[in-house]
Length: 265
Image: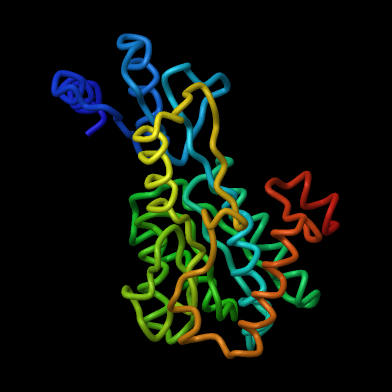
C-alpha cells in the first residue's frame, strides 16, 4: 500500500542497504522524500523521473516508444481486418509514448489501417479492460496492443475468448494466452537494474541523473516468443527496421506533437 512506502524505505536505510530501488511512478514521491532525509543514501527510481533529479537518486527510464514501434510494424503487417487497437491505462507520458510509437509503426507499414484507441483511466480494472477489448473486437479490430496493467490483462483475456490477437507490454505476456499474444513490447528492466547495481559496485554511480535505456543499449525490444508467432520474413523486416532506429535513420515519435511532425495527422 502507498502508506507502507516510507516505512519500508526507512527499514532498508536502517539495514544499511547500499542501494534502494523504487519501481514505478507510485514510488516517486516516497523516494524523493527519503532522498532529502538521507542525503548519504543511494537511491534509484525505475521507470519514472523528476523535473529535477535529487543528487543521491538515479532515475532510470526507457525509450518504450521504440519497442512499441516494432510491435506496430508487426500489427500493421499481420492484421487481417485492417483494424488495429490500442488500450492505455491512463493518458500520462509513460503510456502515451507507447501509443505514439505503436501508431507510427502501424502506419509505417499500412496506411489503410483503421486505428482505434481508448484509455481505461485505470491500471487495476481487468473487467473494464476486457469490456473495452470486447467492444473493439465487435468493431472488427483483430489485434490490440494494451499498455494498461491489469486492465491490459483483461484485454488479453478477451483476445483469448474471442480468438483475436494481442500484444503484451513491459514483460513477455505470451504466457497469459500462448496462442493469442503474438509479441510483447518489452522494457528490459532486468538489464537496466543489473547495469545500475554494477555501477554502484564499481564506483561509477553518480546520482542526480537520468539513465535512458534504448533499443541500441538493449534496454527495450520485442519478446523472445515473437519468433514463435511472426513469420520469418516479417521478423527479418522488423530486425532491419530496428537497425535503422539504432542508427538514427528512423526517428520514433514519443508524443503526439512529434507524431504529427513525423508521420502526419
